[in-house]
Amino acid sequence: MSSEESGGQNGHAPKNLKGLLRFCMEATRSEDAPNSSEIMEPMSEDRRKWLEEALTSMSVNPVERMTSCVKAIQEAVSDTEEGTEQQIMAVSELQDWGEDLDIAGDFIKINGLCIVPKLLSSEVSELRWRCLELLGNLSQNNPVAQTALLTLKLLPVFLHMIDSDPNPTVQIKALYAVSCLVRNNSEAQTQLLAHDGLPVLLRALHSEEEKLRVKATFMISSICSSNPALKDSLVEVGVVEKLVALLKEEEHGHTHEHILSALLTIVTDHVVAWNKCCSGELGLKTFLTQRIQFLEGKEQFKEEKEYAEQLLQVLNTKPDKPNPTTRSSSSQLMLAI
Image (cartoon, rainbow, N blue to C red; front, side, top):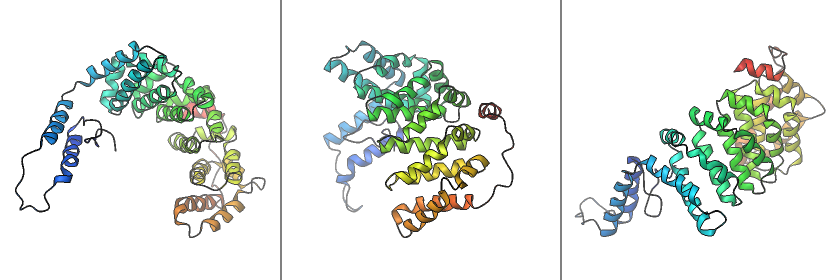
């Protein structure tokens, strides 16, 4: 649920009618009459004030607010407590606005992206990760914003931050930004290959941060589903071996569900990946059989067990025919585009 829909006494004021209705219901819940026969009491001063603020917030001009936030970030004095607080408040509000697809387009039009270099280069990790989350929100399912970010050559910046930023939250948000940028965007996927983005994803799989590992496996599944030609490139850089090794070497946990899901997506309808998984060297079939037995009766790992069963079934069913082309992965990607 977005912050716009869940506005209440202690949260942001709602920005739409749905949020306003929820706001009013939550504000009056504690004083709801136990039965309909009771006489309605006059609205209290606090409730009247909350409602007035909600109605006022709905008349706010998003473009004016975003312009004000951009100005506040630009004019803030860096490396000072006051300046940092000013920037955090401004970018936090921009994050809320950026969740709206139409408003995201307006943000691009007012050149709101001019604040990105200052925020991403900040020594304050919260400013870096908030900026990355803002960029992810803007570009998610938004071709206009995706094109704008690609034009600014931000994809290699995101990839570098996944690899090298010292703050785990920044790394996670950078991966989120990459995922939103390449989703259903053929040009971004081409650039992902050109900037060695797939090896970055594989390195993220070995992170000590569980959230980063989970997001990396989810993104691998996502890009393979949206563009099967990318499977060739992933197999070439060793994704199958990496994922199987993680299953065997890591202590069992909830990340294994996502690893099995990614493997299932890659192996399905891909002969090379299927052959690798069926090789005696990896021993994946034996492992899956043992894992299924281990998960029997463990309700909390129900989905992992289902993925393991589906993957084993795929591996036990020989593909009808080889992949239709033997071209290089880059050529296959261009054909898919």
